[in-house]
Amino acid sequence: METIKVNVKDVLQTVTGEQIQALNPEAAAALEKLHKGTGLGSDFLGWVNLPSETPESLVADIEAVAKDLREKCEFVVAIGIGGSYLGAKAVIEALSDSFSSLRDKGDARRCNVLFAGQNIGEDYLNELQDLLKDKNFGIVVISKSGTTTEPAIAFRLLKEQLEKQVGKAEAAKRIVAITDEKRGALRQLATEEGYKTFVIADNVGGRFSVLTPVGLLPIAVAGFDIRKLLAGACHMEAATKEANDENPSFLYATTRNALYRAGKKIEIMVNYNPKLHYFGEWWKQLYGESEGKDGKGIYPASVDNSTDLHSMGQWIQDGERTIFETVLSVEKADKTTVIPSDEANLDGLNYLAGKRVDEVNKMAELGTRLAHVDGKVPNLRVTIPALKEEYLGELIYFFEKACGISGYLLDVNPFNQPGVEAYKKNMFALLEKPGYEAETAAIKSRI
Ligand code: PA5
Image 1: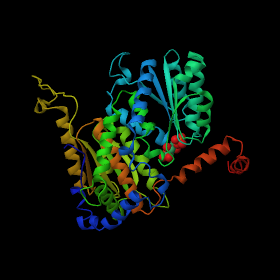
Image 2: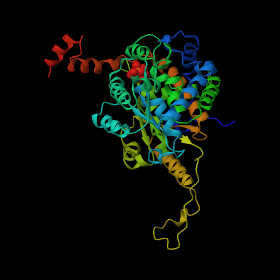
Image 3: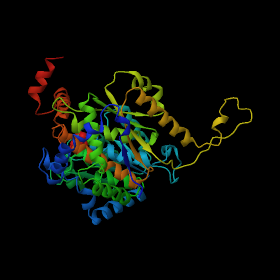
Image 4: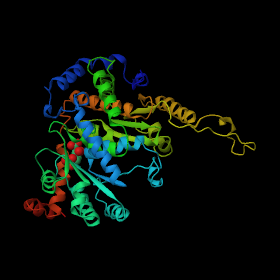
């Protein structure tokens, strides 16, 4: 069966197989903590069995709501930030036509999902509102806490606009809220206004929530098959249960932690397919927020090659040797484009005539790997058969499981994010939010 694979051969000049395997007992203990719920942050392990335990009725409900929104709305704005944004964005980008936003209305390749609330850019919001002013649109507002400022601002603006455009009653039929079952301003607002809602379970943290309605609804609205996504995740759930190197999450976690202990403090997620840009962003949040605490953690970075070989390539080849790379390699391109022969051959490219563009891309990937290994950059490789729902589902669960193991190997709580509060406290103090009077006085004295 085709499935994702992990290859660690090209790290062995930096850490030996024995050094990696020396972490197996610790990693086995970490895996057991995830399965038995005995480790730090064990209140947030709802994602571990989520793929196999997602009820059919929930999938059918998400599909029905997505169908209804697709029929009613030319565009659906998914509002959310962090874990309430990046998973859906990553999967939709990976599966969509690269130029979907420029396709004509009615073209099946056009993606109808737009995003907001992932920034506080005034121009972004203004331009989005301008685009939507004569459009039939709907909103999926996502916030687990129901109190996050960025999505709350976007929702206030777009809700008001939708109500003006279609009336309050119709707007209520086009708004879906995904939030906590009981707590938070969004839950209260959704109940008051009578919106359709989906619940984010208490035991699933934001960055582990892409396989809940948080990711599944926007992905289904964009027209992709969430059953296949879940089936892929289910397959990986089964493949990552044992504490041995056949378990890809286990092998990835032990290898990257052996590299970290050998002084490789930065991991660069590398892709050779522009559709994976946001997958890198999702992965950075997953690992950055889960591991970066208590003065520890591998710094997660990402590059899109071959584009970034012409900007970051020099540093990676030749800069400070504190990095390792994890290359996310897609085995098969979906479309076929062959380089034509040219009689005059003025550009000297006839040596490539008849080759597929993907063949050239693969040689860029192989050539880069060999060069970087020569440059003492350990290379891990994660191979995915194709950009299809089932493999993306596998990949998501694979990285989540490895993240849990890695966090416990570092002896941190992988499921909290206390550091995210510091900027919020300052921002609220600066904006004079009620309840922050003392912080406002303190911060004003600093500036
Ligand atoms: O992983 C996390 O928990 C965070 O990144 C959250 O997803 C992010 O802060 C958004 O939070 P919320 O969904 O509560 O608006």
